[in-house]
Every structure is written in structure tokens, then in C-alpha cells.
Amino acid sequence: MMGDIKKIGTSEIKICKKGNLNLFNLDNVAQEVPIAMVYNGISHAVMMASPKDLTLFALGFSLSEGIIQAADEIRDININNYGSNGIELNIELSPRQFMALKTHRRNLTGRTGCGICGTEQLSQLFRPINPLPFTQSFSLNYLDQALSQLNTIQKIGQLTGCTHAAAWITPTGELAGGCEDIGRHVALDKLLGMKSREKWQNGAVLISSRASYEMVQKVATCGVEILFAISAVTSLAVEMAQKYQLTLVGFCRSGKATIFSYPERLTG
Image (cartoon, rainbow, N blue to C red; front, side, top):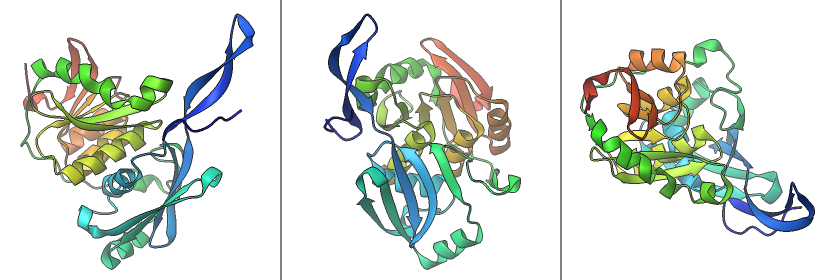
């Protein structure tokens, strides 16, 4: 049964384990909550996510989905919590951006951070994005330092083992900041919202998950030139990275990294 909420993003659940089914203890599990993105009163998307850093989620999702091009195109964000019925993020766009959204609107009702659920036409999968410039560089000698710090932003993950992380790393391997969520797409959206808020320019994105095409598309939409993934990459992610001129690096582990596109931005 559901216990008291210990902190935002986790709940305490009564559990027993193999070998002693009569012994019950409390354990932490990650919360999964339906979160609706509502633009100017019209519901646009429903995602399953962790109920924290929601303003960053609203900003980052709006940017990474191409709904806005700059943070100042959002006039206001209000959070309405309906308990077990979920959370609404009410986002007020400027009239110009709202008209553009209505023109290109899609019905997105997703699983946990689903990247393409509800897309109505195949043509909507691939947004036109200008090729990225070559303004960033990163020494792979600093990658291990960044990897060793990634778990510091996974407070819920440390309690539950149930979250993905996305972080902004500086050219010298420092973690400038990061976000976690049960959904890998949502963790990335939250980070991209944080990047916009903090106005980070120099650096790269590091994710704890695999890099599929929509992760590539999100970072490229937000002008990120380098994406590091701890896990694998997909063939379509590589194809899109080549199209966008994004440096895509997978299998980032201690002392290891596999570069799939545009190694020109890397040294070491």
C-alpha cells in the first residue's frame, strides 16, 4: 500500500523480500505522475514523469519540441496539482507563438517520457533544424571526471534505482548542473530548461541512458553541439546527428567512449 510521501519524487511502500515473506519493511519507490502540458488553455501533451523541477520541464519541453525559440516567448507558467489525477502545467505563450503551435499541433499522449507517442504523421517526426555550428570543443581526458559526478544529481535514483539523469558538463569536465526523472526524455527536457535559465553556452550534454533519435533532435533543436551517452546509440540517432552536424558519443564509461559523428570537436 502507498505510504506517506517522504520527499518530492519518492513514496514509501511496505515490502517484503524473497527468503522472508513474513517480514515487512518500508522501501522507497519513485513516483510516476501524469503531467499535462497545457498551452493557453489547450492541452497539448500528457507525459508520465517525476513530479519535481516542473517549471524547468515546461520550459525545456517547449524549447526542445520547437514550440518556442527563446524563454521569453513564455509569459507565465502555473502548476496545478490535482493529486492522484495528476498535474497540469499551464503555459501561457505569446500570441504569435500560440498561433504557430496551433498550426503545427500534434496530439501527444505518452508513456513515460515517450518521445513520439501520438505523432499524427510520419512527416512530423523530423523537424527541420539548421546544421549546428562548430563553436564547441571538449577534451575526452575530462570525460571520466564528468562521469564520476553524474550520480550526485540523482537523489531520487540513489533512493530508488529508478531514474535517468541528464547533465550539463563544462569543457573541463565539471558538472554545471543536472536533472533526473523516471523518463529519459523528461530528464533531458528538464536539463534543457535549466540550460536556458542559466544561460550556459560552453559545454556538452551527458545523459545516463541510450541516445535515440529524439534525444539527438531535442539537443540539436536547443543548439547543443556535443552529446555524450553512457549507453548505446541507435542507427537513426547517428543518421540525425550526421544531418545536424552534432557530435554524438556513446558507450561513455571509465576510460572508454565511442564517437559516432563529428569527432572534429573532440581531443584526447
